[in-house]
Image (cartoon, rainbow, N blue to C red; front, side, top):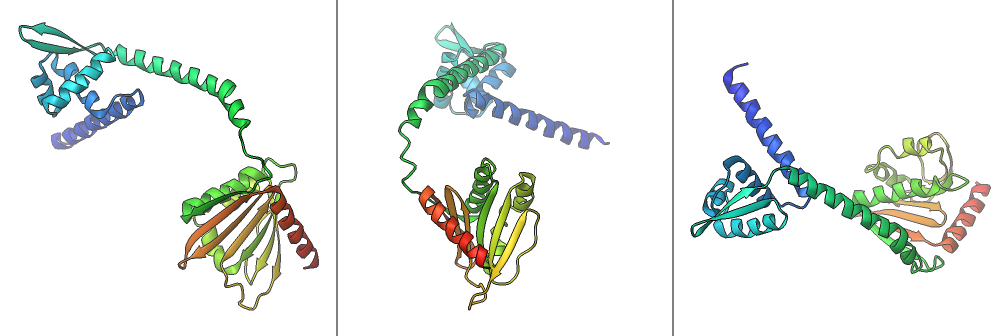
Length: 266
């Protein structure tokens, strides 16, 4: 390994370390500018606002404002020398103190949220008899709906849901969530599918029946019935998926009865 390669590796490592420091200090509330100023003071030692601004690559006005914030957090102190102020960084152990204080604040907030706020918020939840309707678009929206099916059904005593699925939508449905069937099987969730049109793949814990249509199943649609919810997915503009998610015991029950009646006749 020649000297140039060694230098490049060292530079890459140095910048990686700086990036990690910035990301870590962001977690305890320091901005990138504040981190640059603090690191500059650690490297250069005490300095004037002009010295710090030059070392951090900032203008003096910004440096002055950020130094005030750092002083308020006990990360920087200063001493007067004549008419000028010279600033210096406090020991890095102060960063750990700030992190521990933030951790304590978050722990207290989580405790209040768990014991005081969440019970009160639960009391203002709308009546479950009212239908909640949510709209989703794109692959991310469809992925959310598919994951919601698994989350909801796996908590039910009978881990089963029902589906109407047309031929046209099948190749797009699991595009954002290709592991859907594998996760469904891992969770021991079964599904009854009424396929509209030809096709459809056999899968574990899945039973399928078919109905024919005049258009051969060319209408792109997918309806999942998993009380208390129903999800309807379709395509617009060729292959752009949209979904409507209904949360209603009454609607889900009616759709389930209709599905089961048709299922028995097929």
